[in-house]
Amino acid sequence: MHVKKVRFGLVGMGNIGIHHFSYFPELENAELTAICDIDPAKVHELKLPKDFDYAADQAVLDDSIAQFTDYRAMLDSGRVDAVIIAVPHYFHPDMAVEAFRRGIHVICEKPVAITGRLAREMNAAHADSQVVYAAMFQMRTNPTYIKIKEMLEDGTLGEVRRVSWIITDWFRTQTYYDSGGWRGNWTGEGGGVLMNQCPHNLDLFQWFFGLPKRLYAMVHLGKWHDITVEDDVSVLMELANGATASFITTTGDTPGTNRLEITADNGKLVLEKGRLTFFKTEDSVQRIIEQSEVGFYAVSPEVMDVDVEPKPHGHKWITQNTINAILDKEPLIAPGTEGLESVQLANAILLSGIKGRPVEVPVCEDEFDELLEELRAEERRNAPDKAFDWEAYINSFSR
Ligand SMILES: NC(=O)c1ccc[n+]([C@@H]2O[C@H](COP(=O)([O-])OP(=O)(O)OC[C@H]3O[C@@H](n4cnc5c(N)ncnc54)[C@H](O)[C@@H]3O)[C@@H](O)[C@H]2O)c1
Image (cartoon, rainbow, N blue to C red; front, side):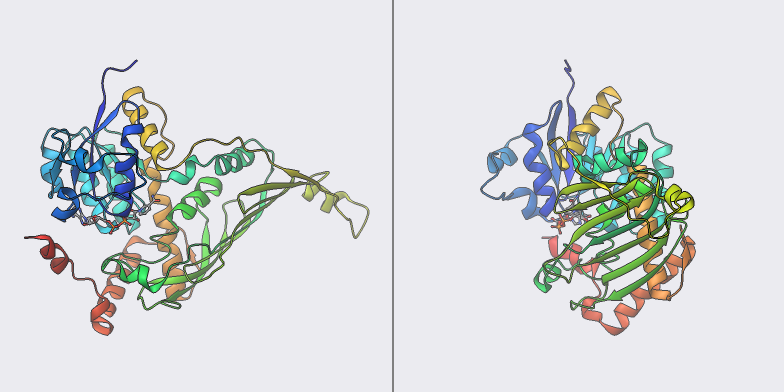
């Protein structure tokens, strides 16, 4: 039994920060000792939804949770061994690197960064430190996705031949984009559905299949919403083994779909509406193609509902796993360094879609950085009201 508890600081008390705050009492071997938000109201007058079983207002007033409006002051306070970074994307790299330099463990919200270059620089800074670095890819704790990974790795599915993921159940309204000035624009968010909603799916994609070799994307900016970033994306990819994959996403469809179909040499695996079904062929598909003496061979697959043992999952389990990694060297479910790949994938999709040509993955960092700079400049020129003003944002909190 541990006597030591990991002392956590939480930076960013917005939507997801409040959620992280709420599960702390349920964690083992950890305590929340500090919270930080650039907006003083968010730390001093913390308001939690009623259904949280946590005496939040008292807790915040309690001396055991120090309140900061400057994250560096929190990191320097000597009150935290680890930090959860739950602020807008642009701040993730600086905050993580500052924590690494101080020997403070990090859980970074997704996406770890906006660009492959920044994510790679975070990895380099982490390599120079001795701390644990995790990314908040809580979908990796979902037993269904774990099962899919197992079936890919233990040979049940055989060689992957084709992947198709339609992930269009990220519907968002204009009110959502208008709810925070940093959302829905290049200056504040650095991307749309690929940067905000899909990092989880892009991470799972690369976790299952690795980074594709190359891809070709069709990307629409502000197709369904009054925003400057992408809200409709269709991608064709070539995986390392030559298999073809398609990935379709948007925040503009409703009712949306989440259907992942993996066609492999031993059959087809389909995940839809949370149900996993395996259509197991009687023989290797490639062997049937090569050796069958029948021209129009009708496969009679065995259709199996794949049993997935229910298991608690979600953000809390990434945090608990990180605590266990800090105290007991438990392997990380989502190492922060693996945050790089989903960013590289998002960058490649955007570059291909906007330039209208196929790209090798990962794309040239200089070329992507140039594109992002152009998009920001264009936003400032064409839609100045959509270009997020960081200075005004930060000043609005300085009372
Ligand atoms: N893992 C998930 O399921 C999940 C879900 C939602 C959001 N997120 C990620 O979490 C991050 C935050 O998203 P959100 O929806 O909570 O945003 P939000 O706008 O609701 O909250 C962000 C908070 O950060 C604060 N903040 C901004 N700059 C700061 C700074 N420099 N120092 C301290 N505080 C600062 C803001 O005042 C605000 O309270 C994003 O990166 C987002 O992608 C992850």
